[in-house]
Amino acid sequence: MKKTCRIDVTSTRYFHVADKLPSFCFEEEEWEDGEADDYGVNEDFPVKSSSTSTLTAYGLFTREKDGSWRVSYEDSEITGMKGCMTTFCLAPTGMLILLRRGELRTCMAFERGARHLCDYGTENGFPPVVVHTHRLESDLNEAGGRLFVEYSLEIRGTRAEHNELLIEITAR
Image 1 (cartoon, rainbow, N blue to C red):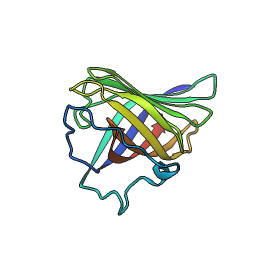
Image 2 (image 1 turned 135 degrees about the vertical axis):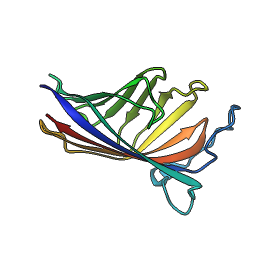
Image 3 (image 1 turned 180 degrees about the vertical axis):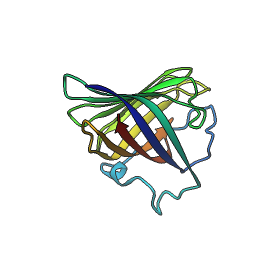
């Protein structure tokens, strides 16, 4: 199954440190067992700022032979990713992969309760980014549906931001 679709993406970012990290590498921060599970927007890690962006795009929605769902669209200047093709792939195991190809290249893995070292392309290079997924929900079907992921990022060993990403797909 391959269909054209409308994709509505809402991304909210809660920054815990300065919006732009210095280019030098921070010291690694050790976490106690289970401590990362509670990391998020709370009094222990106050939010310094936040931003929300929304994007409506049109692309392709596909059900692969292995049972995975794939949605692809061309990103825009609204997200700061103009010139990139963005693809989300939800595997039958429940893992969500984000791939961006173009001027900036990104590969991020989201798996509830897990931490993954990922490549996140920026104008300043590829800092080591750890993605810790708190929630991952999906109700995708042949008509479309929703993907929701709540996750935290560590950049160069420093807790940087907490994000919520909602992707709503309407197949045509």
